[in-house]
Image (cartoon, rainbow, N blue to C red; front, side, top):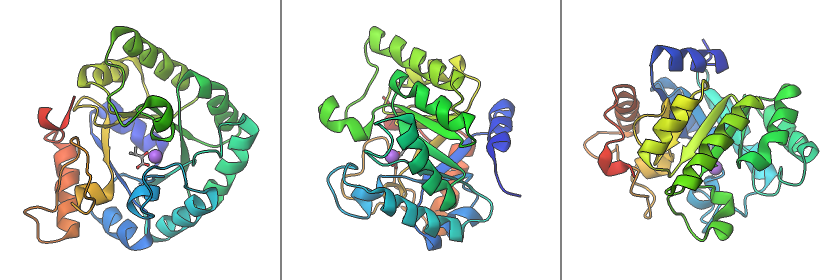
Length: 262
Ligand code: KIV
Ligand code: NA
């Protein structure tokens, strides 16, 4: 049976960790799906790991739509989340709806957008019109130029309090999931406890409702994999084994450890 938002909510309630990986094509989607990955994220990280850009900013909506269609063609069980790319949703809720509708038509079950309080109206607009939204707070890769690099966020008390308030407001606006990227483990734990929706961490410690990694980082393919990632292909005899090892490590809580956290 297809994983859906209710499944993911029940998993949080029952304490079963949610295993998420990024995915960009049908062949990997088939393998990840069979290996028990609950959610496939068609991330705009494809701008870096597939297209070879230095950031996610050049990724176009038509490209996200194409990769979403590819992933949807290969997955039977997993829930599919697709990133709204830079420029496609920031101007207004109406822009966001038009862009999100294209990703949903391509086979996404939910769209993801980056930002805190500034995105609350947009999240309410989309969810009120039938499009599930995954929020994304902490490090916002589409704002890398504003942030001055890929750095841990929410380190001081004011920033931490703001992040918790943002996450609460996004949930109240209708967000169904929230990604926490590169925040201290203690803050991710506090955000998770402040919410009822599942939190999905990346560089956010072990106390989120689930974990996500960039597929090519966890397969050891990308030369600049971040500290919070781990090569799960090492010691395995193939990609399906690596993915199964990742799913098992997320489910049994052995990933991430302190070494992969802040
Ligand atoms: O694009 C992506 O891969 C993401 C994850 C890092 C959460 O947004
Ligand atoms: Na992304």
